[in-house]
Length: 273
Image 1 (tube, one colour):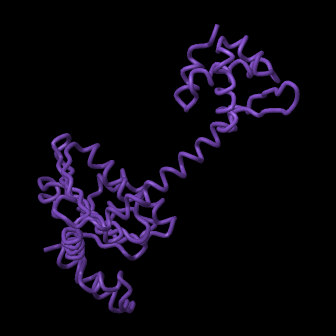
Image 2: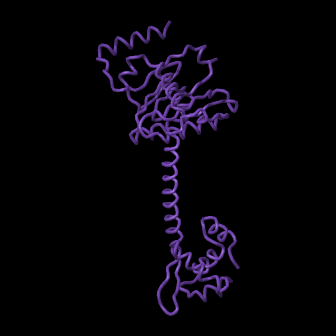
Image 3: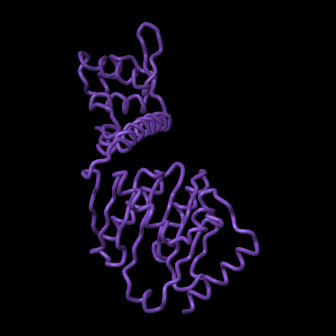
């Protein structure tokens, strides 16, 4: 009598039904000849050797030469580890192939609309996780607190991150990984209370994402790989930087300490008006 739950699990990870039955028999007693496996598994002799040969090809059993040939099971941990690595390799190849298609796709059809706060946040998170070189981001405190972990992970793998925080108070921002490539857009209390929360992100200059994230499940966003729209979103984020800040963040001349202090005072003065 087979453990149906174990049988179903083996089938779900790629075993045939006959192969799963043969493997379960070998887990209980091994080494066994093909004939013995057939007797204990209920699989006919005509089919048991096809099942065992397939298991051997997949690295699930090992055959020991002799008269007769006998079979032993490979530990399930080893099988799962091998299958996990195969799946990782397949997914990496698929990601690379799809990214090439994305880079070539510049038509208006390369835009996708989505609704719902959780769906939108997952889309933004995926964009951050795909980034390899640079992220430009305009964000409010509520969304930043959700995305701080993925952003920090991106920074740790070498992605340059430039962030514009739209907050009421500069103390609302706690960012320890983007360094001085950040800018705070000060919101007046009324603006912070009544305005919609927008999140805008561009990834490696190849993908963009823009959405309203303050309407709960009615929140709306657009994801795009269209080069013109990505450039448009980049320029929108850049517009929130003072020109000198943006130039400096892109590798241009930096402020001297005196310039930095003078500009900081000027920015505080504007914010107080």
